[in-house]
Length: 260
Image 1 (cartoon, rainbow, N blue to C red):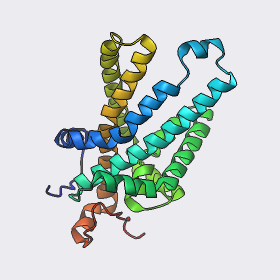
Image 2: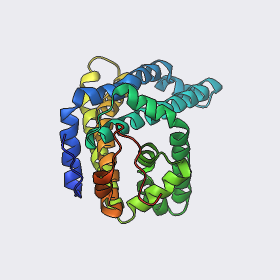
Image 3: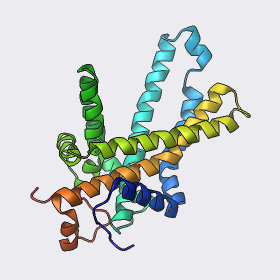
Image 4: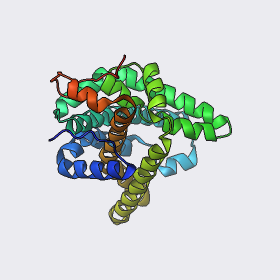
């Protein structure tokens, strides 16, 4: 694939992400399915049912199961998103990586990814307590934290600072991408739930629909975020010129910003 690092508009990002997803649909779906399918089965089997939650929602058993489900979800989604980001970056930069390599690189950076997620959640929570608006701003401002960790090899705190700088003046596009992803998630979930509801009861059918929607939408969302990350580096740091001058040949190797 020819390297094309020209500046992109929001429409360009959405269009390119969609074209990349269509061209690599099965391989990208496989990246997320490797972890999300087993996790979905685990959630369906282990999650307290609506009747159990209605009876004693805060019973020790229900609380324990909810905490386990949440921790597993955070771990699985963090790894799946990271592996997907590595695959997208390799595709975009003309340095394809295998599924195994994508997961190897992501797992090697897992402590930083979880640290970045923890910092983001903490800052967003504090922002929400400060009249809500700062929390919303932080949510968009730190959307590029995982990309910075995986593409540049920086730690959690550095990634938070990098995301803040890269999204400055561009958080509207982050919000727009989040909005598009949320609409896609809802449309797919609703469509699947109609069919699933014919086979399973409402509770199980809705959970299955949500999991399928996540499986299908996550690659597109990650493609948009990674493209936005590189686009901001092109516009603010001359990343396109860095790439032209680079002599590295490792697939999707971390590329630090100029002057780091």
